Image (cartoon, rainbow, N blue to C red; front, side, top):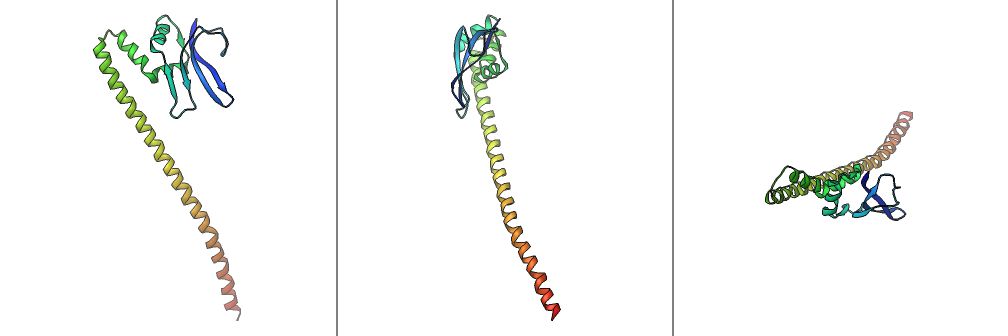
Length: 157
């Protein structure tokens, strides 16, 4: 059985992966049939390059992608395109649907980045207010400790 999976490359702590078609019995970084793309997880945002024709060929002949490779292929839009072809849509319909898909995906990514940015700002604001509260608390304690001492001095006279 042929699998589409990741083959690790790159140096220590900086991974870079080749998306390969390999026999299921071969080890992760061992023998493979063909390199069909690359995945760079350390880039911001993640960088995926894929030869769509070869990936479609391997999927067409029965190669099974791993879950990670399936997600990467989905992010490029290839699975959606293959589904439309299987349904018998014309090339014009597929092109129009893929443009719509690209627009939806870019909007979804933009919203996700906006949410992350808001969360980061809220976290920074919470940390700043916590630090301000910690700085104010010792000052208040010092004032509270001084007040009873002056009261005791007045009462003792």
